[in-house]
Length: 148
Image (tube, rainbow, N blue to C red; front, side):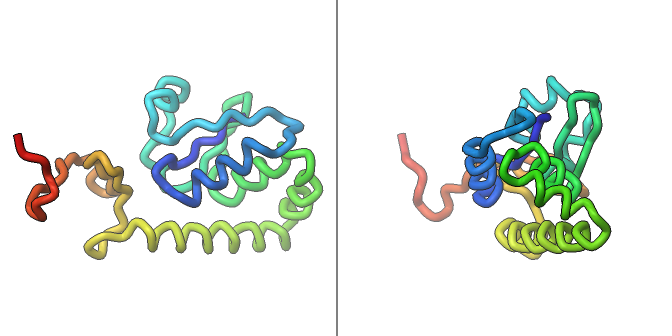
């Protein structure tokens, strides 16, 4: 299975590192969402959406998002498969969804600038769900840029 994660998100990269250390019953390939590798491997996928929430692609092309993606990921891990089975019940699914929504709320609070929820990278690129990708080079207004 391939897990697409936001490489610019501190929480996402922490969880990616945690996943890489876990004993896996099903191999997980961890790929940055929106990367050239993700576009090449999954050309028909909505890559903007993969930056909004964790996305898992199964070996037969199944696409899981949000809480379902996390349940599938836990199912792939040796020590967490029993938890995945509990979370796949109707009552467990509510708990999983609550956990994912709480993480999304925290993550969204980290990505809010000027009242808009935008995914921003340090190199000047930004993604907004309504307008897509834009580039704004870093400003020198604060005197922080080197002069030639």
